[in-house]
Structures are given as structure tokens and as C-alpha cells.
Length: 640
Image (tube, rainbow, N blue to C red):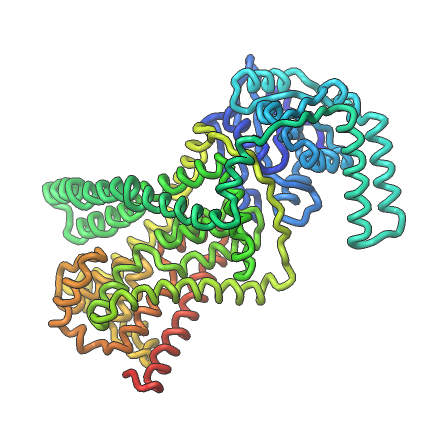
């Protein structure tokens, strides 16, 4: 049972409830920007805490993960029940979707059975009225023995009423009603009846719903109404024939907004400022201050280049999460999960994984970050580890360059084949990891379909800011260190700073790495160096190859690939690769270790260095094996 808080100067309130009840909207309306977002110990589930001062009293609000039950089967369920039973709290508020009260009361009854005193917040009253649902608050309070409040999350008056309750209600004056005590006694009888396994669970669930039905028969009125807006929209958006094409169209629009119309132009403008005016200004200032050449190079190429690689991604991150948060706020994302669940199940995931993975075709970083929206630990980890296999925008220049140079008559088909390779490897990876680690774990796909509504823009903007800030602050530190490290390797050797990269530590390490590919057809140090630079950023593979084969300025833009290929055909690159070894290199580049940005994001999202190094190692190993099969298999078939 939750214990009462001991600090009289702070009122501690926990919000609990099912997903899609408006709980997070209430939290955001109360706390605004006064929030701290982190992770619960040992898991990747968001931990949200905020504070507000109301009528001279300081209130701390904890937004617990949304969950349908507290059987401790998932990280969310365990977090909720452990926290409510162990934390020192003044008030526990169970936020309920009034338009779906029967389903929501299941969690309420579970918590009351465990002796946790609750205040029931019957939220979404506006939606309940539209559905012809009317609830008698006084009767419900009498049936349970605990206080009940009616709210509409986005209504300022409702929020003020909640804050008044937080500062005035003492739960010590409430206790379970006779009806509730009788129900708890029946649950205990069932538990002691000798039933086990599913028989026991079914008996308990049946008793809970019988109690809920008894309550609702006396406190709720359900009037018949015509088709709601949600039902009319679902007849189109969730239609068996139209659902998938419409989803793909909406997904395409999200891609366009993020990577073409808004996000990418802002990113390009930032890149131009960072690599142009700002870099020139810093270079002039350093030269004027007579800073040593090596320090200038470190600041310009290492630090500014490293920070720039983080900042340039920021507009894409913010725009993507804005779109996803907006769609989630409308209620559409829940439909997407149901539409895609049968397809995703075959890959070992649930339907909720589809949106984060689709983002991997634009950029692996937001794809990895998007996995936090999944409420099952297995799905989160598998989605995070599958996302980097997909062909992101940074891999496309590599594919376009090699395809144009070595497969000029079938360049488009070869590039498309690389996309297929990425998808197949994501599926293979998920299957392998499921068999190795999650063999006995089958997640129950349970998801409430909320009504369609206009999203609360305050919630959308706060969620966008939280996710974007998390990327910038936490993942950025790892990315920055990686960028500076790669710069040092490419700029120095044992004798000091070098004029040519071929004399650097990077070249020496490249020779060692290149030796790993002796049987792949590209066992030279230049290819090894390109592989290493690709861990910094996949785009740098093309520019590294250009520099190492004698062209000092090679554009990494995909549309310049044909011109680049023509230029490179006159260099040593044409002699260094055959068509078959080039194909093997493309396959390896498609599959191997993600860039530093993605690795840093994996570390952040899993809160585990071990998981980050595992992702780096096992993807490299898979890429090595598959590209070896491509090359040696091709030789056996006479394609060399």
C-alpha cells in the first residue's frame, strides 16, 4: 500500500491509468515546461516528473507509464505497482476515459484490491457526452468509497479543480466501501480455491468484470446515439481495403515533411551556416590569434565538425517527432498498429513497431528513438536493433556511387536491391534475436482505440521538445567524442601531424581492417579506412574513397553519383574493385555497424553500453558473413 508522504512542504501526486486516457495531457497542462524526463532504473521506459506551485503549495507530479493492468508482466506494469506500493505519496489519481469506463475500471479495481487508495478522475467528459454516457459521481463514490472528479483534460477549469483537490483532499478520510470489501473477499476466495494457471486468471477476471458491471448498472446511463465521428472516420481509415494504402500515403507525407519540405531545408541551411560563415569566422579568429595549426585543425575539423554532425540532424529529429506526436494525438497511430499487426507478427514484432521502423528509410536515429513509443520491452529492443539495417539517406550515396560506376546499365535495379537486402536483414536479425533471447516471450497485443480528436498542441510540442532535447544533449555527447577521436586518427601518426591521410593512424588501422576482407575482394587499406570512416558517418565513405583515390573534393550527394563515378573511373578505384567486389562492398556497407550517431542513440535509448557494443559487433559480424557469401558465391557462379 502506498505510504503517506512525510514532507509537509511538498504534496506528492502520482497519475496512473490506461494508455490514451488523457493522462499525459493532464500532466502537461499541470506542469508545462517544469518537467524532468529520464528513465526508470534499469529499463528504457520514460520517467516523467514535474512540479507546480498552487496557492502557495508546492506540488510534485509523477506521470506513471500507461498500463491496462498491474500483473507485473511488463516493465510498465512492474513500475506502476512497485511505485504505488512503495513510494511515499499524498495522492494517487487514476485517470479514466469516461467514454470507455468499463475497460478502464478494470485497472481501478485491481489497484483497489491491492489496498492502494485512489482518487478517480473521470476524464474525457466531452467525449462521453457525445457517446450518450452519463455517470452519477456521488453514487460511484459511495459504491467504491473513494472520491471521484469529472474533468476535460484541455479545459483550464478542470485543471484548476484538480489542483484544488491536490491541495485539499486527504485520502486518510476515505476507505473501501462494503461492496468493495465484499468483492475483495471474493477475489481472495478464488485465489484460495485451488485453481491454478489460466483457470485461476479467468475466474478472477470474471469476478472483476461482474463487480464492474454491478457498479455501472447503478451509476451509469448509456443512451443510444447515431454514428460518431470516430466511427465514420474508421469506416474509411480502418477500412479493410483502403487502410494500408491510406497509411502509406500518410507515411509518405510524413517523409516529405521531414526529409523534403520542412526538415531537410532547415538542416541544409544549418549545414551551410556551420560549414560556411561560422567555420570561416572561427578560422579567421584562430588564425588572427596565431593558434597552432594542429589546434586549429582540431577545433575546425574535429570539434566544429563533430558538433555540426549533431546539430544538422536536429531539424529532422524535431520535425519527425512533431509529426509522430501529432498523429498519435489524433488517435490514428493506434489504428496503424492494428492494421500492421498481422504483417509485423511474421517478423517477430507487433504492429506498434511499424512506424519507428519505417522512419529508418529516412534516418536511423529517429527510427531508433521512435522505438520508445512501444510499450513492450521485447518490441523496443528488437526494433532498435533492426532499424540500422534499413537503407537510410546516408547509405544511399554509397549505393548510388558504386552502382553508377560498376553497374551503369542496371544502376537503379542494384540500388533497389540494396533496399531489399536491408529489409531482409532486419527480418533475419529479428528472427535470430527472437530465437536466441526472446524465444518464450509472446507479447499480448492489447491496445485501446481512442476516439479521433484534434491533438492538444501543448502536449505535442512538449513531447517533441523532450525527445529532441534528449537526442541533442545525451546522444550528442557520445557523437562528439566519436567525431574528435576519428579526427585524431586521421590527422596524426607516431611522428606527429601528417600532411596526407595515407600516413595517418587511420591508414594504419585501415590496413588492419582491410585485411579482414582479404577473401571479400576489397582487402586494401583504402577500403578499410572507408569502413572506419563510415562508422563516423555513412556519408563519409564516399568522400573518403574520393580523397584516398586522388580526388580532393567528392560530393556525397546521391544526385551527383554519376558524375562522381565518371571521375573516379579515371583513378585507381577502377583497378581496386571489380564488379563483384564492388557488390560485396555495397552489401557490407548496407549491413555493417551503424554510424556513431546511431550508436550513441542506441546507448541512450537502451541505457546500456553493453547493448551499444553488442549492436556494433553483431551487425559487423553479420555484414562480414553476408558480404563474404556474396563474393565467394559470385566467384563460384562465374561472375568475377
